[in-house]
Length: 364
Ligand code: NAD
Ligand code: MG
Image (cartoon, rainbow, N blue to C red; front, side, top):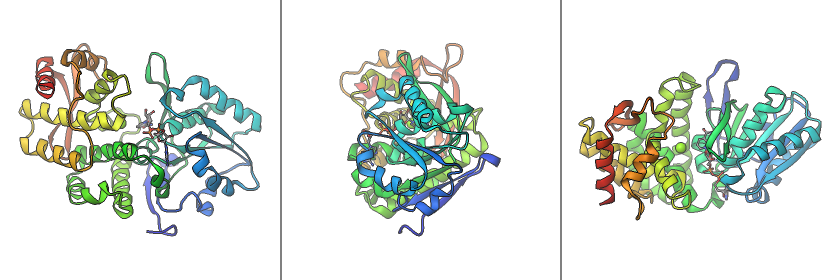
């Protein structure tokens, strides 16, 4: 693969449709993405880790425009309302008009906050996602969920606001720490586990190449996950149904992340363990076969992802955290489980005793 032949995947949403470009050298392929800017104003939102590495490549493409940049400090804690206000102030400082464009250069934190800011400025202006983490390329940059955290909880405020384009330059992954890379792989596995068995088999066959961060394998994995997610989003943009399946492993995973005070597990790592617990629960409820759980565990292990509940966590505490999940209704647990690899479904009214049994078994 080279800069002249990116993979293009279209997210088909009528007037709000947009391309996702995946390939090498795309940040420097100015002719391609510059066509997405309609006006004279652009604001690049990035952070203090990513900007020194990649802002210059983007800046060269903004020649002749009125543009500036706004850098967040690094970390989830900075996905805050206070920083939205600062981004909006930066747009005001530019004199940004309705045809201005916000460019999000960074991981999911930058993308979520920049996208939400774009949704707010003059009730919604264009933004372009330039994801630089694997997680952002395969997950957060596609689908139009934007938002920020409140002290009361993660992602409590947000808007659906689709980008004009997603520019996924896989060259940026060369500087991504290996733990972040693997956490992104968990969200790739998740897509396959939910609804694409052939993709899951492909991941099994290419697990060594992916663990070794082979360019071609990585690009193909990103493209297949994005194609899967784009399909789901096109059918259910605002999560009235099918899109909820993308939360496979997330109820368990969020509980694990929270129990570890967000310092023990990265989100993707929580999702990896969470998917495995969901598979075991599916097995216990007689929905799925033990073979599928075993395949999932082997794949996660090969990709260097955790498969065990971290030491010191308590089953009752995890269950209590799971009760807080947004998907629950009227005191009943609602979980994403599976019938087999590639066949996930939403299951309501799951008995807490069964969940607890799975947690006890995992912790014993
Ligand atoms: P992140 O944005 O914090 O990035 C992870 C780390 O990698 C950061 O320290 C960042 O500075 C660094 N980094 C980014 N790109 C780099 C590069 N190329 N080289 C070196 N370092 C680099 O985390 P993330 O995992 O990308 O995203 C997590 C966020 O995404 C969360 O806030 C989550 O809520 C959100 N999210 C949103 C959606 C959605 O649909 N909108 C979906 C999934 C996750
Ligand atoms: Mg996730």
